[in-house]
Length: 99
Image (cartoon, rainbow, N blue to C red; front, side):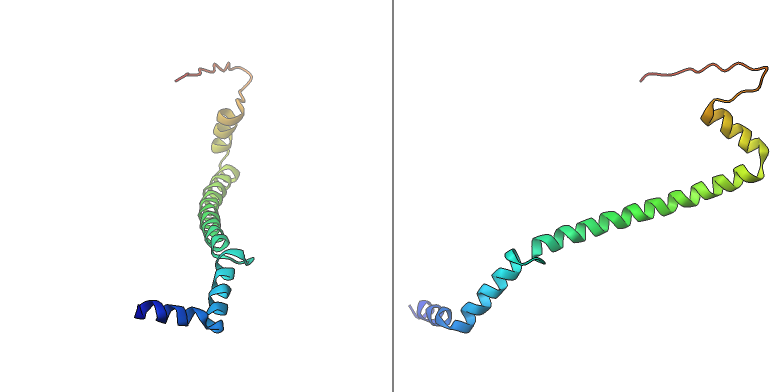
C-alpha cells in the first residue's frame, strides 16, 4: 500500500506530469523524434558507405584514364574490348556463355 500511495502522490504532481508529457512528445510526436533520428542515422551510414565506394571507384577510374592517355597500346586494347573495334583486316567473333 505504501508504494501505491507514493506512486500516486508522485503522479499527482503537476511538474512530473508535465515532464512525462514533454518526454512522450519528444519521443513520438516531435519533428525530431527518436524514430526519425534512428532512420536518419541509418541513412547517413549508408550514404557514407556509398561515398567510400565512389571515392575508390574514382581512384581506380582515374588511374585507368591516365593509363589510356599515356599508352596507345592500352587505348587500343580498351577500344577493342569495350567497343568491339577492329582493324581493317580483322574479324571479330563474339562468344556468349549463358549460365
